[in-house]
Image 1 (cartoon, rainbow, N blue to C red):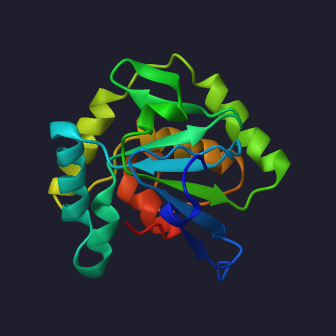
Image 2: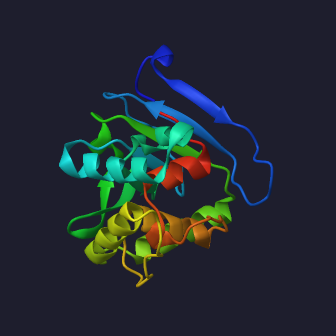
Length: 198
């Protein structure tokens, strides 16, 4: 990282108790810090500003109660595509690439997943295949409604991309499993899955 060593907090999440879970290391990056040792296939969780970030965190707080509410800290996620800092993310215009520098002034957590090079390649290849796809606004709205109603229905999977749905589908290519289907997930679900705390 390009900052003083004492400014970085590294939390290690030990080996998961079952094959189903993926062990990971978590690096917290405060505003002003940028990761320099990125690995393709890893993810970042971002706390985004503005009304949309607030709305996503509110929905996550509706889904997660008590101690689990801390997972609602994040409102966006991205997949690392290259060691040079290329990220894949979904925004209003659809699936696109950006550099990790975009989040230099935001609070984010870098999640180093314990994946083989082959599995990383599968996740990244899937990510590249999605470039240019449209944003799944209908899925986003249905997810909000589902959460508001206490997750009483599953969001239909029409293959549309949201920031977390895209990452989940990419990681499924790498053999990572999740309790929820891609369109039913939000950043808090990724945080809980990998044990990422603010």
